[in-house]
Amino acid sequence: MFEIEYGDNGEVLCRGRLDAAQCEKALGFMDGLEGPSTLDFAELEYISSAGLGILLKTQKRLVGSSTGLKIINVNNHIHDVFRYSGFHTIFDIEAKE
Image (cartoon, rainbow, N blue to C red; front, side, top):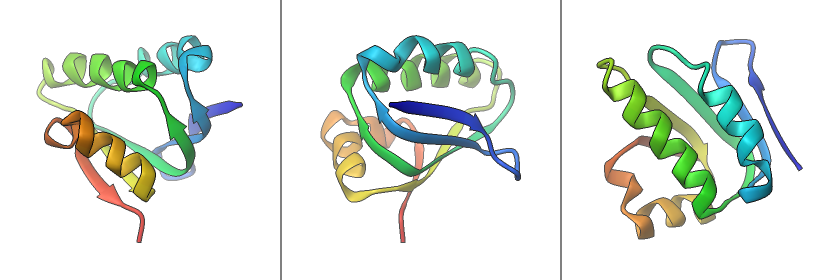
């Protein structure tokens, strides 16, 4: 199960598991993002390589417009995925406190 929606402060809330089965839903939402955007991963449990691909595609599109994604509240497991894949150099990431 994966949910994605805008939060009260304009951040994008991601919940559940972002895997290949959920990519169409995530991509549909991400394609609508314009300008700098903050993704809140406080309730994201898992991200697959397909999910990373969606983030990368969105980041490339936004950086082309001189903006980008910021990812906050990343748990240790997902933070490790970003580090091992080298994505920590592509995104502004804040770990969960």
